[in-house]
Image 1 (cartoon, rainbow, N blue to C red):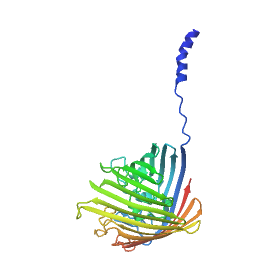
Image 2: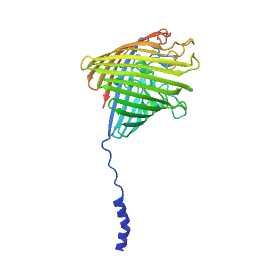
Image 3: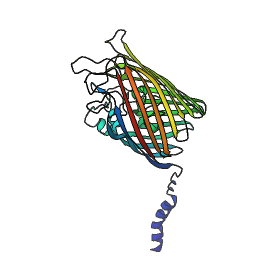
Image 4: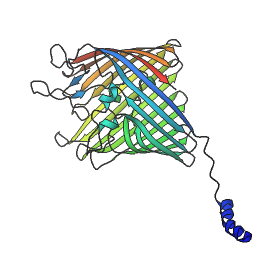
Length: 375
């Protein structure tokens, strides 16, 4: 009987000895948490009756500040980031008036898509490293286009330029990033389309970005995008930009040009362009000054449709020049107080006037923001 027990127990012992040892956890991958709150008050000299700034014909011309004569939150988000040698990811949830305005055109196609959820997902992606210099990420991502980011603290001016507001801030799809050398990074993105998470047609969009850093102070960038938009209409988009930091001075420049096939105009192709030039100087360790000039021209209203006036006549196109000056104060390392005065002049009346109700050729506003970073 004793031998029988030993015989029966032997396979169990053998299995216990030969079963694979669980791999130890990858302790080199770190998870960090953070957050950001940007509260503001803005005064628009046009005094829009609805308190929505620069809103005409159903279109909001700028994503921030979105409200007039109102204390509100421009952007607030919380995030969790995973960083490791072979794996990475980020999940960030957001809210704010800039979110409401920027995601207002997010399409709804079917019963389980649309902005009600999408607007609250700033980023939600997972990535894995292939080889020594290639990453593949998939999910909801920041856009690969432009020189200004979505979060106000990361830009040289508080409000974003028109050329930034009218190119995508986010996209949904897959990106491949290749660090070709310490000075050159290349990126390929295949996404659902031009700033949309929910799909609105059977086509997809694709684009590349190249960032060259010839030295520690200079970044030169090129980016493009090609997609099927607005019902089998080919959209092309190309942009170049540079960012230079020299001592206390930061310079940023950007030029974007786009086209879209359109049978309703002569030649069959509509086009638009935008440009901006920004300078920011650090006056003291806690005070900085900024200035900007810009131009945006969408004569054929491909990107921004200005809508109709109250009498039923169409508004003119957005063909505007802009200028701004800003003051930044950092009273504490995690606190940023920014004040900016900004004005626009358009070729025709598109900016609403709360007094007369008639669209005006000019618009100006002043905004003050207090932001805190949690990390």
